[in-house]
Amino acid sequence: MFARWISPGSVRLTVLVWLLTLSVTLGSASELKVRVRLADGQITDELLEADSEKDSITVEFKQGDGTLITFVADFKQDVKIFRALILGELERGQSQYQALCFITRLNHNEIIPSESMARLRQKNPQAIRTAEEKRSTETLSMNVAVNLTRTWQLSAHIHNMCSVAREAVYTREADVRHWLDRGVEGSMFEPQAVEVPGLQSCGTVKDLWQPCSCSYNLRLEWYPCLLKYCRNRDVSGRGSPYKCGIKSCSKGYQFTYYVPHKQLCLWEEET
Image 1: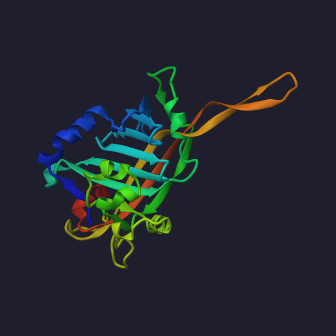
Image 2 (image 1 turned 180 degrees about the vertical axis):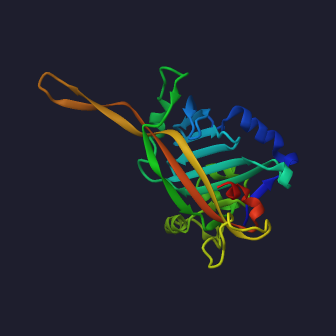
Image 3 (image 1 turned 90 degrees about the vertical axis):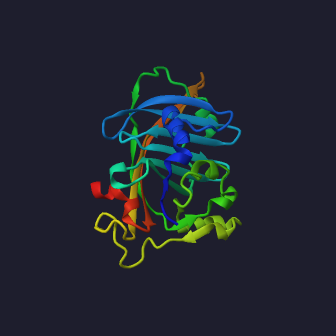
């Protein structure tokens, strides 16, 4: 399994539509668009969609370098999906876009429920948002490749999200063990050689066609991570809690995975 470069002819139109609309269609979903300040100081429009029927949330935005980041939280299956559509370096023989997909287990209290997200409104749509809490970067060894043909057992969102990535869909061994215990078929998983002795980081490899360990970093710069509760007090002094807002968070992720040649990980040269 390896990172796939998308041919311009087959999906160029679809990708351009994504880049222009910054949206993922999830059926009858409510939408909220917020202006967010990225780590490099640039401002981006972030789209948040909540689908109460499917019990899922989507966060999507374009980074300053043109990369389109999409995050989906599937609460029904406790699965989260990250997708990156990365602009290629045409002058170095790459195609227009490279697609990566990372699938991990969704933990409780990582993000607010879909029904709460669906009710969110903003008083000032022109306000530029920065997260109240900056959470530490999580490092994830994505040492298992995923066969898309059977991913419906994990989440119905995976095929729609990751079909453009095909051979570049990864997960973790720890998550695989959890899913196997739940009865998911093991044939969809293929171990990868991320931590094999002698396998160098792509940043240190000189030969573009040598296999190496690639790292990809992304950050969800603003998302509603917790619900805030306030208290009403009656004449007796007793209080009853009620939802009165959200807390916003920022969180980074570093994904490490195997690539058969450095040509699929050129951004490591820039770090």
